Length: 224
Image (cartoon, rainbow, N blue to C red):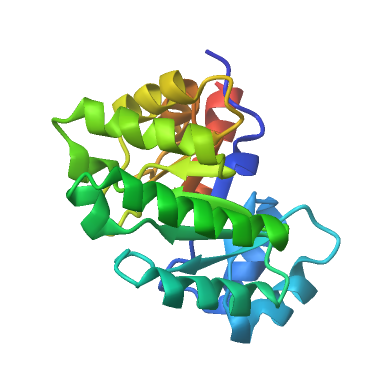
C-alpha cells in the first residue's frame, strides 16, 4: 500500500514535554500539522506564529478527567471561546458514561455542541472507549448519540492513560457512516504504520506527540 503522503494533515499535534511552547509551535508550523493546542495565555502567540498556515488552534477542557459539572463546563466553554479557538477537545461526563446513563451523556453532548456551534468551534468529544471494553452495545450507543447530536468529531480516548485501538475506530466508522461525524483516534500512536492503520480503519484525525516521527516514517516508506 502506498504511503499516505499527507499524513501530517491528520495529526493533532501534542507538545512533547521536552519542548517549550515556542519550539512546539515552530515544529507544528514547519510540518503543517492539522492542529495544535493552546490556552488563554498562549493563544495570541500561537496565532502569531501560525499566521499564514492551515494549522488550527485548538484547546482542551475537562481533560483528561471528564468530571466537571456541566454548568461549570459550559461557563468555561463560553469564556475560552471568546478568544477565538477553532476547536475543542473535551472529555464527556465519565461517571455518566461508566453508569451507562445515556440520557445524561446525550444531554451534556447536546448542550456543549450548541455552545460550540454558536461560537463556530469544532467539538471533539472524547469518550474513553477502553472504559467500555467488552460492551460493544455501549460503544455503539455512544456512537448513536453522537450521530443524533452531530459533534464535529467523536474521539476514541484521551491517551491519559487510555489508548486508541483500530478495532474501536472500525466500530465507530460503521456506526457513524453517513452521519457527518468524523472520528479522531488518540493514545499510543507513535509510528507511521500505527497512524496508517487508524486512518485505514476510518480515523480522520490522530492525536500524537510523535507527529514528526510519523511524518518521517511516511517519507521513508514512500522512498522504499
